[in-house]
Image (cartoon, rainbow, N blue to C red; front, side, top):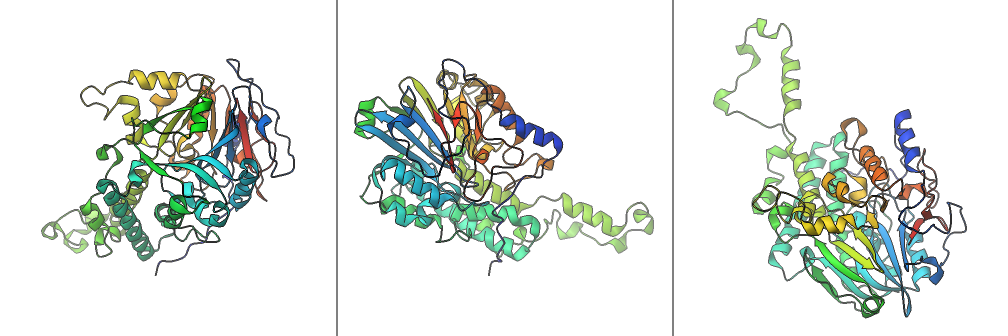
Length: 487
């Protein structure tokens, strides 16, 4: 039986003075540039669960709302149309560092939208992007939804996609068994990766398996909403009200090239079988013919370092194949992310999900970088990035989800939002912390200090992250739970 791990629901980053200074810097607002409108507020707190109405959007008829739920994504895009405000939900989930605020956030969204959503976009099936559909399935059963978009990896009639999803689910289950057998405290992060793939054992009231969330997305709303599956280059079909209002959308990812999303095949499934010693024992790099014991060496060989010290050093230098598999599976699922560029009233908004290198590589260079004809940014990617007004920071501020080439090509002064919760994944000492501080500093510079983090606002009983201030212009916080950007 897999061991149970205690989930920490309130974590603050262990910050040095220097990191706290950087955190304070990230909360400072700046005047918006290029004619960007000011927000309606500067961080004042009003009662929760307000309903903004049509006045909640800006001159361009757009509002982006980022809910704070912990380590997860929950965004609501609202647009002014001839028939009133229409709403697009982009993901709804939380994984570790759950703040237990997602049900309140969904209640607020229900009031805001009148329980009507023009479009629901599921970028990919990680629990931190879809668990809310399962934990709050009763609330979602009261919502009317016109359309649902998913990536082609969710298409049940696509044999390659179905095979890959089965492979990833099997790998995740085998990882959990192997991790339980190893029973090492340092494996907690790997265990979280496995649970994020399946959604099981997340410690969230009401159950949050990804299978349950997918059932809601495929038939758990008040009406039977049509589901369509897209890949990079497809022309999506939008609800008619949004078309009439002038909204257009481009699908920039994921690619249809399985090599770019690190496909796992049957061999990989077998590789993590619980009978495979490579997942629970040290690697044996040499054939038994070349192996010996300490007694075959003279005592002089251990004068500087003892036998135990040498053995420990060799063992620690060996690769952890289970860790490598966990990260490969995690990255593969992230690379399935649906990447959408919306254009409305001359404004361009990029929602990148958790897209990682293979997904970005296809968009930026048109294929695998270095291969024939794919050595520089394409004219299309340069044009898109240079005209961005808004960027949803990929993968909660992880260093592997916003390539330097992409950030460098973005328009200076664009606005960014990052849904994140520090202290959940990685360590600053190894340069793996999420959010990655140097990345946020680079985004902050590119956006002229117009970067908002979800942990800059209170959610439930959880205050903003220590060292951060409430967001200022061009953002507003009409109430707890969320941050708005209107344009």
